[in-house]
Length: 96
Image 1: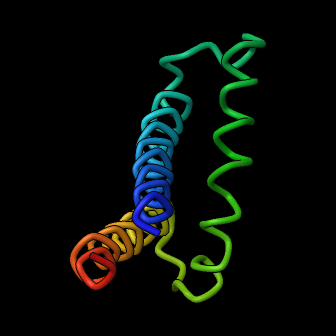
Image 2: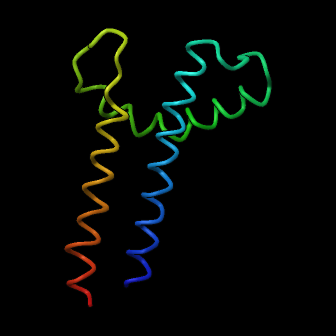
């Protein structure tokens, strides 16, 4: 059971970094720092969008429109932090 918790924590950590990379990529893309016509850049952007968008979509339904500011990545990061901390501080000690 401990191996399952460690695997879940690893997946949450990887997802954390994918969300951070997605946010940085979107800023670089928005400010034309990277070439948007490059096929590699487009592939990376599409992959990051496909991984993160299913996480953001339910949150965006309940968030008010803040103009150009998207707070859904921050909320997803807070949820990931909560779940990770819950697994490590509550569930794992109860199993041991």
